[in-house]
Length: 388
View 1 (cartoon, rainbow, N blue to C red):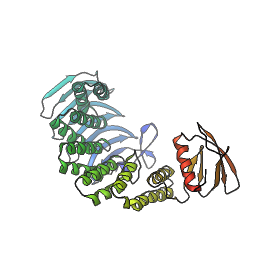
View 2 (view 1 turned 90 degrees about the horizontal axis):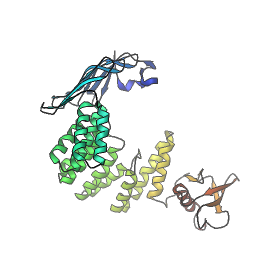
View 3 (view 1 turned 30 degrees about the vertical axis):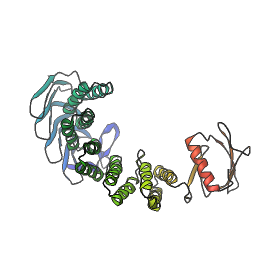
View 4 (view 1 turned 90 degrees about the vertical axis):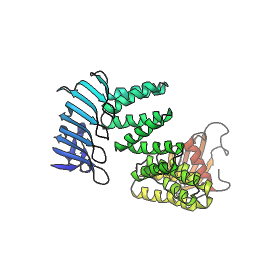
């Protein structure tokens, strides 16, 4: 029996479930176009039997055999050109007995025993890069890329590409970026598309930079697609395509709100065309409405905060104000005043807040705290001139 990964769930002890029961059979993972990227065999929810992975396009990437979750026998990996890159021989207990790696042309890189894992090589590459030892980092990342599984290999290739780019090795950087992208990894491939586009833009290859930004956008990764939209907008602006740039900035403002991309996008948009304020405001208002309907309070709150950052003068309907470790909607608040008649000159102070149900709330407020500072600004906006 074969099912798609989309129809599985994760159970206790990382067992794969289907319809609530540990699954026995084959699970395939496909891309958006339906191309098969992996087929894993399971027995009672645990990998057991042949495990195979492919690059987009159909070239075999990795093949191994599992025995109740443990890799046994031979594990083989190939480059996108079909050349064998790595062979590891495991004992029946999953211990690596021997490892061999080759370059893209089939030349032997090294043979070694079970002393170093791909994860250890990757960590060594990170340490050597931080210490400024580019050549040692390069060798460690390369070893991790040919000896690691799909996750560690893709991560190592992505880091190796950035290392090559940062040290001015243009030709190797291009190869590594393309290989990282070819892995099809759900996180590291779109990250590498984004980084490759930046690299190409710095080289002055604007047409290819635009192509890879567009690929990153089309991939729909929650973080990297938004960052790619932001950079694509700036590239369009540099090329005099102002209307296109504004459209990209507006899309970069949409949820999910990861990092500071949305706030950077709306600030840049208004620098270019302040007449777009209403359109920008609508992006966040729509996000509030959609997130509230879906019960996603985190996204709704973030959208309100971004709307306030975009346009502090806009009175949001029934906005939530967080202050003094309490939350109030604007509809609840009737008035507020400092307990001693004036704001604290130093440090924190007490605020008397009155709600329309007749309740009196004494809040301990620190104007230096970013949340309290934002809450105070929202209260002043709500209460108008003379308030607070």
